[in-house]
Structures are given as structure tokens and as C-alpha cells.
Image (cartoon, rainbow, N blue to C red; front, side, top):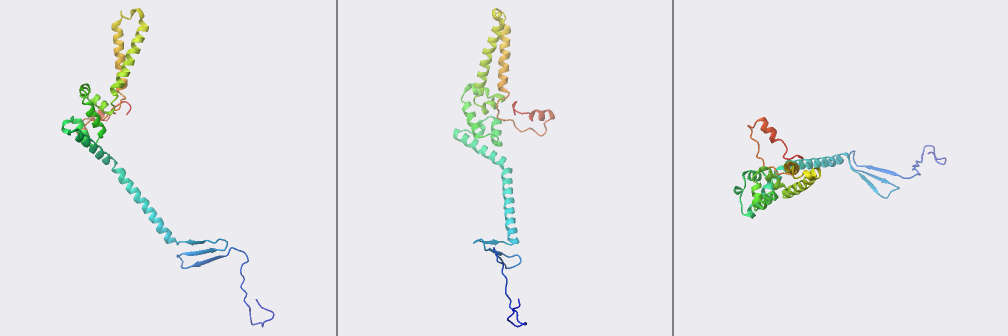
Length: 236
């Protein structure tokens, strides 16, 4: 601004600073380098990384996430194989502790062990049931074997259901016939037998099972494939 005391050719330059705060100072090292911002109202310094650095970190994070997904995919793909190997090892350990081999077991059970479809707990239950003569005889039938290996209380449930059925059905027949109860004893007996069969099937059909069926042959017919694909029990 011109000063009245000086010559017209001389000028005094008076810099004007803003009287209000905050005062922002920007220091730029390069177009894409780090910038330093300082605010008068805050004692902290704020550092800003350039665009390239942010992209690198973003790429690293994305690549890390992709690696995790790939690793999880490998684990998911090998779950079935790992489960089969684990079941096979458990079953062989149980047989070794009992001093038996797969040759001493039924063929369907030995094939299921080799395929890794049953764990060691099923083998333990089989060896325990084999000590009883009645259980050994029942396990000759495939349906009983599959249910006894899955649930060691299967026979107890059948006995309780059939016992209650016999008592209630006999009481109902006596209440209906009264004085003719013994005269129509053959009819009463037939009704009680039907009740026992119904109660037995009520426990047998929904009971859990251990699948010991061998793989279906490639040359099997359509009917065989249909029945093979049917569930093992009523609630499966």
C-alpha cells in the first residue's frame, strides 16, 4: 500500500494474515506423496497416505480374504474324506483292543468299516451285544442289527410299548365283553395279537438305524435302484 510519507515510486508491502483461526498449512512433497496437515485448533498432526498406499493395503486385504475363502473351500471339500478316515481309524483301534480283526466280523459290517461309514462307538456296541446269545441271534436279521447298533435301548422300548399295549387292549376287551369275555376268548386273543403287532411296528419303523447296505451295483435295474434310494426308517 502506498505510504504518504514516502516517495511515489516506493511501495511498502504489508502482508495481511487472517485474524481468525484455525490456520491451515499444507505441505505437499509430491503430487501423490504424503501430505502434512496442521490445524491451529488441535495439537495433533494428521498424516494422510497417498492413493497408491491405500490401494496397496486394499489389495492386500482383498487377497488375504480370497486366500481364506480358498482355504475354507479346501477344508469343506475334504470334510467327508477326513470323517471317513477318522471313523476307519477309530474302528480299527477298537478291534485291536478287543483282539479281533475285520475277518471275524459280518461281511456287511466289515465293508462299512473299510468304507469309513461307521465310527468306533458302533463297533464297541456290536462287540458288547455279541456277548449275549439272544442279541447274537437277533443280529442275524438285518433290520434288528441296524437298529440295535444305532440304539442299545431298542428292545427295552419295544418291550415297554408292547407291555402297555397288552394291558390296555385286554382291559378294553374285558370292559366291552364282561360276562362273554371267556366265551369269546379267541376273539380277544386275536385282537390282543393285532395290538401287539401294531405297537411293535410303531416302535420299529421310526427307530434310528445304522446303514450297512452295500453299494448298489451299476447293472441294477430301475426297481432295485428305487428301493435302494428309499429311506431306512419312517422319519428319515
